[in-house]
Length: 263
Image 1 (cartoon, one colour):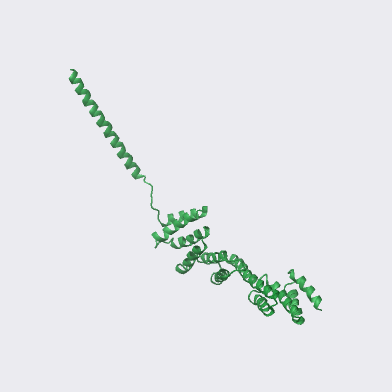
Image 2 (cartoon, rainbow, N blue to C red):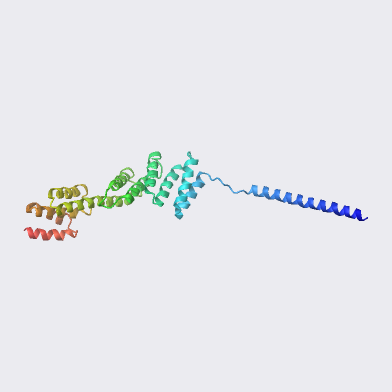
């Protein structure tokens, strides 16, 4: 009897352990199947990837946005979102203050997608990239000149763009910068008594940048050159042009005093 009871107990334990193991196996299988049916989609399509990049850019996560836009361009070359991603990539590089890389992307938009809705935006931002790389007036002004060309092209090619006013403003600032460089050069020549070189600098401002805020100063300084050369007739004519053409400028009052002195 004792042996029979032990045998029954052993059978029960074995069957019980197998039942527990079988139940555990079934539960795990159900869990895996359930998880598989609700698995999160890992790979995003072009549209989703582009909007993810845009959200990152809006948050200021510039480098993360760069990666997402690059994935759209490289993984979905035939997608309708490629030009959007190219422009977004330029903006992301600009956000990271990588102006040279940003300019490269904006040029690519203009070259590869000239009919894109982002074409005028790319043209404007190309000018902004050059503008932000522009050096102080005492140094080389290559990027200032490039900015002028880019903004002028926007005005010529996209006259109906909403960015026209902003482009005009940036264009004016760029032209003022070149005028300031020439003005500083002219004043240096005047100080050194290199009168002919000074005249060329000031006349160059009046010819190339007549709408610049430095035009009035250039006209007045032209009078100063002639006065120092004792060519009073030419000096008087130069000062009178300051009063006539720039009556609201501060330098007009100085010109009036010079006119009275000469007379």
